Length: 440
Image (cartoon, rainbow, N blue to C red):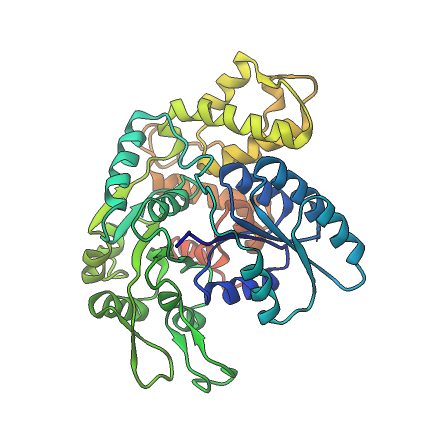
């Protein structure tokens, strides 16, 4: 059986989620993009057998995206989704290589019919790129990750936000014997605690008010595949016990269910927390940790990978050079020096954003030192510590407080800038005893 990988592109989160739920139930493994630019970045990394894309997005057009995809991967099948009255857009997209289109709103059976009709029987899905690094220490980790991928062992990856843990998790799945199964990811910090249990374990019709139909949980959807538990360190203690039982018994109890359902999902857990500290704080179960970290990797931050700063800067420059229509862009020595000496608190994700912004606003093809602007943060040692004694925790706190100051204490905006969920930000402020109880 060929792997069934589909990229869904739609800025409407509800549509993206609903479409994903429909396809996952048919064991298609999915990737998602919520904007035109995000989709372009993803197709630069992978050739997808199928792409389902909306036409109208705030930052670009699905019509243009269809042309880009076909230019790069002619075998990729494209289905366009569009609103009533916009059939002409769908027709134009088909001229650009799309196989079919469907008008919103549409029943689940119709989109499944189109997917099954057009999904290719054979496809060369070799990734364009997997995990990009030239850092010797990280290359050694990637080699060990490749060996671990061939087992069914649970894997725990720790590291700061933006270091590439999610990319490595997908690499593990694609390199494993489960690569033909589903790849399901859930962010434990992004979902309210009262909803997280039903998302993980599913529920039966009538299990609670509003449960008007049966819904499988993520463990069920990941059966015979891989389940990624992102931000596992933020999982509430009461759910940790239930996760432990699933891992031990290999079965789940849906909410409101009368029987257990066997599941066979390989679990990869990601965290930017110091789990050992959380054990000491009694906010994480030791027995669960033993189940999750059969194999454990710590991904180093970008500031400790100087070789990668230059390598990835050049890589992203070429991507966004094409995106902005500019050619032959290159860094001057001073510009590269500026990139190399910055602390990169947001890691690879921040580097990517900086290079993108630089290519948009630079003049000419020589990127000068002044063309590179860091939006906010150069860390300074806390006044209570001598220079050289600052810890990662100090840097994290300093970054959060500076961001809140710049956003006039708007927590939602600060969380967006930091690249974390609002819930994670609130948890951090509680750690610092700074939570005032207000969301904004």
